[in-house]
Length: 165
Length: 422
View (tube, each protein chain N blue to C red):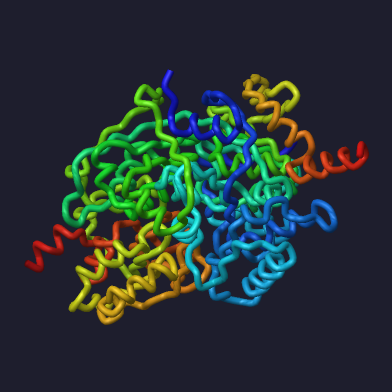
């Protein structure tokens, strides 16, 4: 069973997720993961495991255009569930092929130690056996996530265009 | 049915008769701005396929500002890679380390009403002051734009802010936007376009409108808008020049929420650590001792900001316990400030002049704080750790409060300072 990090509060900003002073010191997952959430939860980088889940409140990822946290979460195969996301962070995640789950009811229902299961196909989060529905993505945006991110979507389109020309 | 600004411009850019909030449209931005993060973006872009070329070279504006001059070898390598990329791809709109902070450079050289401007930096929203649609994006999206030249945007709902009256002495546009953020909270305008209207907006200078637009992201907004008027047109004629199309909302446009502010009733405020929406009257903060004052940045580093601070500081000296950093927003601002003799009184008062750039604002260099230290800054963010040290404390204020505070060593608004120095 994956560990659940949080629940963290509202307005968790990009400086808390990945401090500004690190933003030009490498952009690979190995550069990012040891510094993730450094000023929010020092335990996180020490103990996070692949496939863990993060739960937070409203406006998660507010602040800068800083995609390193999303790069880190993606590389760790994490699922991020929040009441809502800031729009730049949301776009960064989509473009990396990381689906963020905006589901206020599920976050409210979560209590430390509760079992959390996510069913992407059904757009459902299950907390302690109770299902909560989250809204599906716009079809255009869904295609980007399905491709594994914007770059993969562009690459696939270009390969297809070359194959037919 | 009336249309808002963002509904009109996005319909135009998408080649559609009309769009509605919630709709996703595919658009080609007129300007794509990237800064030092171009080093990471170019690797993503050139990794798409070997020999890939930038689709629309003339639409990209690259400005080095986030750590200039380079603070260490890593930053120096980033800058070098960007310069080589610009050469390799033949990109005409590159600005090296001396030109200024990206958002100010966009304002001075590129922004016009009716443009769709995107940038891989959250404060890209600043160009909304000109009636442009200026929207922040992320790094991967910027890489995609180098390749494809187009992206998707969702049509947002719109808030309207009606402004009347004029600011009292010592109260500025910064206090308007901080008060607004305090009122609606850091997520209060999430995903929205925020339009500023009314006689109060018309009375505001272009510099003031830039300050307000710059900080709309701190309420979570997607973009800000001021209707182009004669002040806008004069500024744009003298700066970016050329032709443009203006988009004005219909008088019957439908707004999700409407707010009213009488500017004459606003007071000088500060945002307290560690959130921008923790807004308090500056006059009630006199118990806060300050180690460093930062005057400048893309939020408040323009000529009118330096002039307002110089009026207070000229012929005086800052408190011995205070360090005053002065960061003009651009080369143009610095040259104009030198010409108008605004820099000499600031430096003579004990100010430390720093080259135009982001400096310590996001913790890179040139004025990092130590544990326990307090900074009063005219910048736009006071997040924990923002200025390089998670055990320091950042308060945000207008430039006049910053100048008064530098003199006294404790947070001091203009009204209090004037009363004690009459």
